[in-house]
Image 1 (cartoon, rainbow, N blue to C red):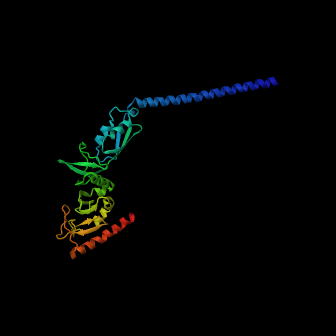
Image 2: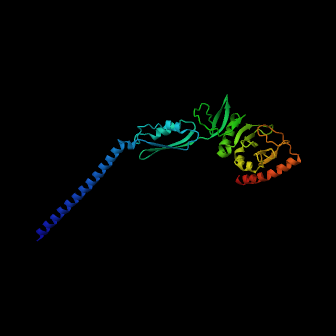
Image 3: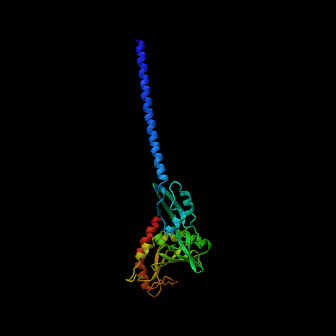
Length: 296
């Protein structure tokens, strides 16, 4: 009886092992089939037009043209996704002085995305017969070949060495919108005011300020400009200048009623009519002044 039981157990174990081996083979075949399918897909992708880069999207550029960026990343007609080097593309992009940061990303199946961050152009200086853009780090693009660099910074006059470095720092701190409203900045030191500067805006306002505080004060300029009374032509009803040396004050010019934003003016605060104009325009500026004090 025991011999029959042992024989039965032996047959049962053999059958069980056979089923296990069969199942293992089925799994191996399935894995092999999947791997073969994946390899086939990879080969199809690699050796057909599917892997050729057919689309390049560019973001973040303003002063650097798309043509210059495409030339730098060097995507050719036969460039393939699996051989294209994004690190080389980034290194080539960074050779452009206007590009501060660059990212080049592959997007399957056949796209490349380029995202650049440009250095700000904060001003212009005149060199011989042309104006040279200055970047936020002080770099002057004297021999820069990019043809469509926008002049979105003011012309700097009279700044040398550390004073020039300081005004560049201050301009870089300003919002782009505010900086674009400034046409010219002049270094205008006086006997007891070695940091005095003058700004001339695109809406024909003259501003007197301090080199060390001008960035913080100028962020309120759009509100200041809007607060000044103007006639139908857009000219100030009472011509004068904004003094940002201490706080924010509007000071009328002595005599005349036209804006004199490109030349120095003598100031006379004693005239009754001008004092009245100053008071009217000053009330709006005082609100901005208080807001500035709170933020500081």
